[in-house]
Length: 439
Image (cartoon, rainbow, N blue to C red; front, side, top):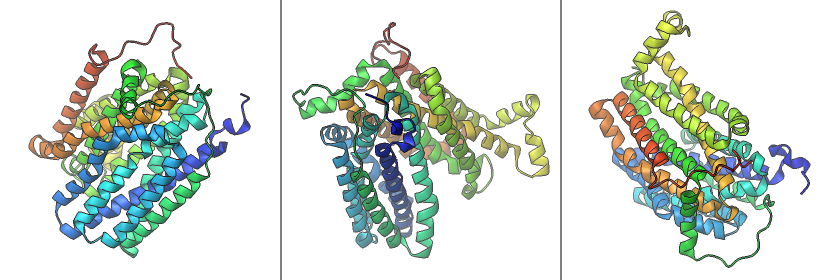
């Protein structure tokens, strides 16, 4: 097949560009809705327990329905799945306009919204290798991660706070529903190209075989297995970090929790750098090596936050970063400055693991099983992060936030090391004759 001009630059690839556009619109709507729901539940109940129930309403459907949804997403046409899913989401958010003052109806609609949403990640991830060439997968997945970040900023930072203060929650839900309809219209016009040779027709697998196939791929392919292990662990650790960040800001940095933007902003800078570095690093080192490197950097970053005072002292004694100058002339604590510096590689590492990890799964999983592989990974990530989500705040109150970060990093290292070298769980090593990188 001849190389087409639109394949040279990803943003000039019409199907992939439409996929990105629909994803940005949909993520903006979803994050705006989530922000409004969190504020609405707190205002209606004044209870943090109700906020926990809301989070559980979004999390439990992922654990229960994630893998079956991945199997169904592989069976159904990808564009059909995305269009119907966006339309269903628009209807659910529209119902929130009417039931916005009924807390238990909000919980039920949130669970229904999350249930519908289980079809999206596997369908979107499985669509990427169908519209781009294999050597473009690292760059394509970097752009997919970028749309996720862009949707979070647009929905949670810009759209929802503005509309909530100006017009109230009903306005947020109305705009979110319209955005979901717009995303459905964008993705409906997307044409799926085929980047792999057509396979001969075979009898469709049973539903149970379809669900188990994603697990079989991860159990038989070591690179996919390792990418899944490090990606899942990093996502779980990132949720722990998000939960602990307000307390870390107050207890360690001794500033208001509202000022945690001092940590979040440098992390966003690092994430943007990761989006630029992931594709060339994947071509140079191989996507699966980039995942391992990013995972190691992320663990080191968490350890650095746990030992932030000692890290500050080491750099002041041996490396001249101008930290003391900033503290003396600007008045910003050297601990805060060191935390901001550490946040940059943390954001960088998370993006490297996210983009390169998804690229590995795209490269290693068969086209017909992509949805199941991503569904299995997503369900596993949410299952593993469920317990820390419930207890990490209490543990931090008992032993301190820095000790909790250190314990989380050490536990993650121990578990990932065991899964990496275990003959019981890990598939066999990559054959020696295989090239270092599929792309």
